[in-house]
Length: 145
Image 1 (cartoon, helix red, strand yellow):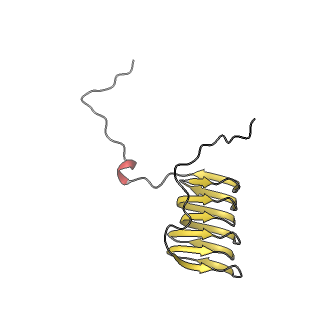
Image 2: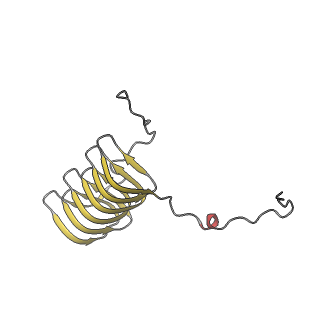
Image 3: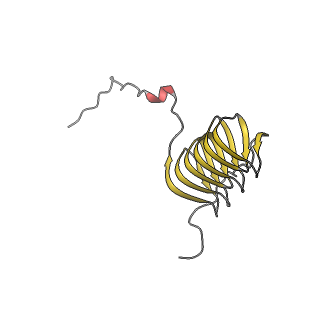
């Protein structure tokens, strides 16, 4: 097999920061416990526990997260270990590493990024009208021979 990639280049470019950062934990920070946030949160330190909230989590190259994470979008440049549930998208950049269970509708892994564990590509929540099938047209019944 030649050195060519079997994957095609994505037409969408992974985002680095979709909006202004509203919270930040620096490299020398160690946080243990539960954290919630809104907007964009950048983590460059170490975190052990649970992170849950709507928003975007940016995991810096020096960051290490161990635990449960539930966010809209996560951009991984560092290391994340544990359970991760993303409502919109997971981006694992070239220096990013994920180990554990991952559930997301969209997964982007750049060359060099790693994913070790279990991944489920779960569709976004269906709209109410999609949950109920339409009634059959009774003017033209289907006959089975």
